Image 1 (cartoon, rainbow, N blue to C red):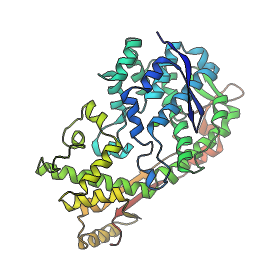
Image 2 (spheres, rainbow, N blue to C red; image 1 turned 180 degrees about the vertical axis):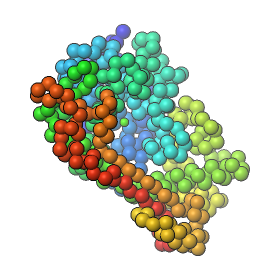
Image 3 (spheres, rainbow, N blue to C red; image 1 turned 180 degrees about the horizontal axis):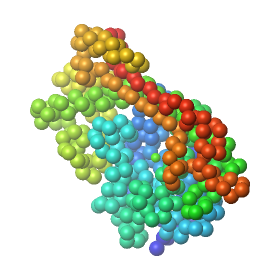
Image 4 (spheres, rainbow, N blue to C red; image 1 turned 60 degrees about the vertical axis):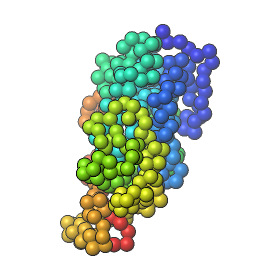
Length: 403
Ligand code: CA
């Protein structure tokens, strides 16, 4: 049912050194058109405007998540012994395919288009796609099992914990990978040590007490990556221009359905209520940039200006929003300078907690030496002080330079 390849495929990777693919079904999924599409979507949609080498893709990240899951299945005794071969294949597939539904420019695009990538990940698994065919040909019902792991409804909670919890293969890969490709050291932590200290008790993944320090490091890595990389104001400036451009396109199309002069690349996302899987497949970041270049020549001055800003990285400046007077003043100045405030004054609010002590199966559990089980914030002073502090947030106003 799950055939092995004649020879293990070994892919070079800067984070894991090598990625090992032993089963044919995994290799076939890698070679499917839906998975190959991930080469055309960057892992960090807008970070490249700040960190010039952050050009890595969801393709590499997905392979990395698969590799961590594969190693958990092999190296963590409690996982190795409790899962069947089918469970292991299902969770490795879930790791590989968890981001398959992502659109271009990651979460910005979700906000613009109202498309949740998790929903599309499950649709790609369960509807008429190459991946669906590969999975169902191996075993009927396999595609739904993989979808269940991704959306946390699989009967065995251990599988979902491996790819979707506060300490999981997804986060561990992206923190290390994003740190590497941005050239920052904030995201570094000891993956080997974490893997060595993982245990399974009561069908829940835990970390043994001596592993606490590497978990603290991991949580701090997350904290720094959010504020230094993911929420970097210049990347958010790119996202404000992007969302303004889409808003302008929508507004023009509402008045005139031919407003884009035959440019169809964005159709599925602005005209139709729900894009089909084919619309979703066709839209990637390469196509978006082609679209932006075309829009630079559009008659509508707002549209062509916003598109030009994205292509040439002529982004908005930003200020912390401390009082509403400031917003009013800047809006007045922008209007006087000829900018339409709806598209040229953009607000963005972000907040983040590096760890949430909710106490569910997504929490980080520590298996103490005396056999007791404690949640990480009860066993680590660093984590406990980190979450007792104020919930950090950052509210910024974005607007054109020179006003
Ligand atoms: Ca991911």
